[in-house]
Amino acid sequence: MITFFVAFVVSLLVALALTFLVRNQALAWGWLDQANSSRKVHVRPIPRLGGVGIVAGFFAPLCALFLVDSGVGYHFRVHTDLVVGLFVGGAAIAALGLYDDLRGAGARLKFSVQFAVAFGLYALGFRIEVIANPFGPELTLGALSLPFTVLWMVGVVNALNLIDGLDGLAGGVAFFGVSTNFILSLARGDVLMCLLMAALAGAILGFLVFNFNPASIFMGDTGSMFLGFVLAAVSIKTSTKSGTAVAMFVPVMALGLPIMDTLLAVVRRSLLGRPLFSADKEHIHHRVMSRWVLSHRSTVLVLYALCGLFTLTALGLNFANSAQSALLLCGMGVVIFVLMRKLGYLDLGRAGDMQQVRQRNIRLRSVVKDVTAAIRSTHSLQEVWSAVRPLADGLEVARMELRFQQVRDGVSSDGIVFETQRASGLALPHEVRLDVKDAEQVLGQLVLEWRDGRDAINRDEELALELVADAVAERASRLLVVADTEPGRVVALRR
Image (cartoon, rainbow, N blue to C red; front, side, top):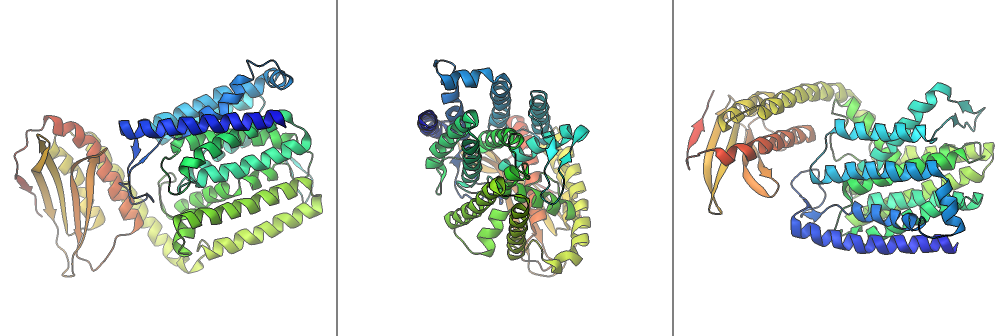
């Protein structure tokens, strides 16, 4: 136990110190998560890259084991597959997250690295080969072991990433998963797993000091994906060494909240015709906050309590017999069903409109895809406007403007203004303005006006406009450097 405590304290101190340094450096260098999207919960720029402290805190005591001549150190070093898997795989996932936080990584790059790491772990012996069944005989996966293991790894990595939407939520959820694995490993006398979980627990708590609401730093993808990776890998080792009738159900239940949230997101977006990896404000934490009218901190504490319930269920499954396990799973199923009803996920009254929404979203996705692709191939601001104009038809707006600012000697002034109008109704106008921003610099505005009687736009239209504004900003930031604009010039293109 002394070794576990030392690992915990070392991780805690390293995470505390490094998170503090990264936070201050991020503020100095402008590495901030901007509050420039409607899907953001925070209202001011917050430093990111806090995950660097988690990664360093976790590896610090493990690296020390290579230098210390002890029984635990020897036990750690002889498990080559585990050491290589955690160090190489963890470094690859952390590097991917760091690149995404600094430069932005597309879904293709993320999945390529995640799947490559998952295949590598499978080759090292991290394998799910049997699915336990408390209601009958266990299921041997055979040839399905590889895809099941890979999907588990990639799924958990992204589940922790998706749940990272409120201050302290992802770190707290991970801590409950770590606690579950630590208790199970301690009960089995698995010294190595206890050591890993003690190190990760210290790293998480050191980071949460700065991340609990109100957060002064975010973990970013560096932290969320790394936590998902370690928990996914360790859960495989924990379940394969378990002799219970529900071995694989234990880690699933320990990570119940992020797994449930991810499954709901996939189903929801598929049924509504949304991109599977688009951001929205329909996650469990968003609905708890809005439907139960809770504060940011209260929402996180409620979800901590739910994670505690999942943890108790996971521990109960590990020590229960088949009949008791079946009762626990049925009881937890009832709790989940009631929760889904309370949060509106099972509202059958909306089922009739779902197909109509799906068709509209598919058309909107097609328009946005064509518009953003056209924007990225432009060579002048005039061509950018020509690429954006089809959006007016796709969203049925009455008037659309695209304004570009001119900055000279630090002073902003009107640059080029493009405008188009369509035949519309006589209702009062509803106007939406989106800043076209490159980091903190405002390059212009995209203005849309409807006269069809609406007083708001729906979430899918909101996300579509944000994607177009981002594409315009990306292209305009390069074109405005060489553009010789005339202040006050208006290019009016009416139909």
